[in-house]
Image (cartoon, rainbow, N blue to C red):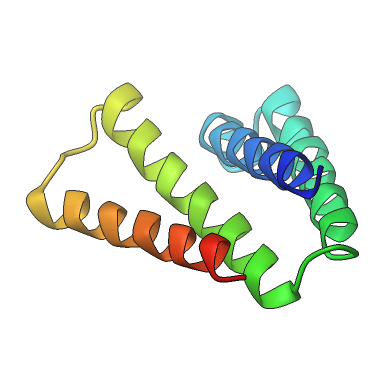
Length: 104
């Protein structure tokens, strides 16, 4: 169950970050509101996960998975450049997440 809650926290963190792009410096109302709503939900999920997981593992997975997902979304949906160093970096993030998860 802790992995489901952590996954939801990551999902809402990613949604909050996407809304940041559309908030246009907090000049657009609904995307600005959604930034706080989604990040709030994400942090609540993280708080619940921390009851069952080590803080070092939970936070590292939460933040790095969100970072990797946003990078992939940026490349595919926002046409950000894909370079070999970005791809290698994402692979290293994924390996780090797997290492933390497998050796918790």
